[in-house]
Image (cartoon, rainbow, N blue to C red; front, side, top):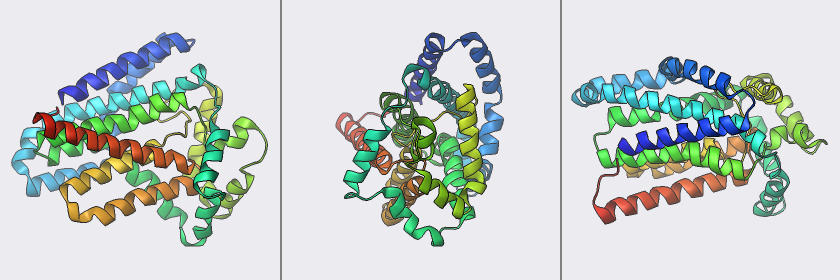
Length: 320
């Protein structure tokens, strides 16, 4: 808990510094930021409402004493997570002022190399007829959003192991900030779905046509794509905006959650693997990511998880 607080505080300081040096109206952005901080608890509740209610019900039935003890602290951690998400957006939407998109052509080459000369999105669209748009939206957006937003609250409410809580708060932070801000800034990329708009040409026109044919672009995915592009063009810095592909925060968060479930319930390993692979498949299918975006996120989170486990066992100290 203490380490997570320091990480969020450092992230906040870095975010404000980046906004100060790389935007034209930093003071206005700061004012808007603190206004959104006040709305963070409501945003957390709305974005993960069904999961939040599920946690409360679980706690009341199976861990009432722990729920009573941890709920105030869980609320504080939820606020920290809300601040982290806001700063994540501040940095993500400012990154284009620091570096232009440049890494996509290289990532496309890596993708084809890893896929033995094939195009990953074309491979996934071989299964297009079996993937309903509504189910895709539910899994990729709604389920993930609930996990990605309120995972720290889940930890505090349902887990009494302080060492494990500390490790996974660090993994949660790394999934968002190290992958989505730090490494993403080094390898600025827009992803397949925005490639033609950024670089020109029609390299991914067949992908967009396939998504239109499946009805995907007429749903939430298409709406979010246009919303992100509009805010990118206008230079807005609203919560949840910003464009970057490599590496994938989506896959990083999914991997972190799968590792947590596996660590608590080792027999669920096949389900956890299938969970991560589902998000990897959908991230390529929907055009948000190159397949290498997901591979790197999985590798990074797994290695960090192993390192934190090793550190904990070596020192015998509680990582909080």
